[in-house]
Image (cartoon, rainbow, N blue to C red; front, side, top):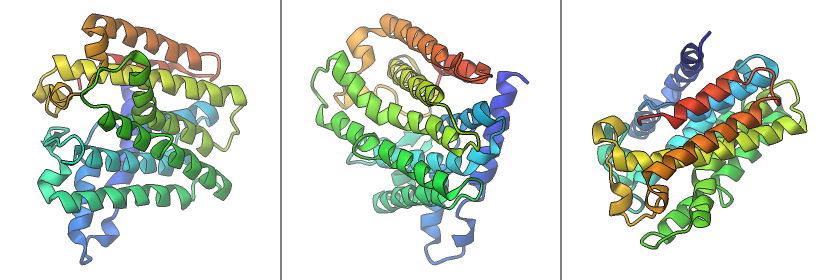
Length: 296
């Protein structure tokens, strides 16, 4: 099976599970909250984080299914972060994945609650998984909490806003992106290993971390490039918003040519980290290559 077919297979698993989320509450008095949650959760996207969780599990034990609840949980948490990131008090974006953002479609207070509820649902999905052991579920919750909180996304978002309007050096840019983007990508990889009934060796755990860190920086640099050189139609959200919000990016720091070189270098390092650590790293390597060349 080729890379595209493997990706579609993993994507179909996740989409099928997410589609059924929160259906039991759709006749309740808070139906509109469920609609807002599902509006953002089912808006599409590449589903990179859940796919990473599934494929790291498969790389270790030969199957994706044990990580399916963890994959859904991390996508719920990622979606919550996007809803909050788009709010007027944050980036104040009107488009996400080619559709009106949650607060534009449902209003600010309801979008805020939808994000809060998705974050809670993410941890419930991990904690209550029947595909894994109770001990694994506890470890998974700890992995996701660390990535989401003051050592991860929230810290990165704080710096991203606090440092708006000032020139940043490479180290400061890296600090923001390690926390804001890299932490959740790392969590996705580690959740896949945590779900596996086969215990990962220490070198496999470290290889997953290294892969995610290099992938995370490359992902953010590519994002910064697309904000300059893409179109709103391709990207599915406004372009040029980084400059408008006074954010200093990799594109501003290095220029597009050097950014392209850095993406290639980091992608190669990510691939090297999983070669030798896992029996079949081909998909993970192909995924790194595909993200380096993405158009949205």
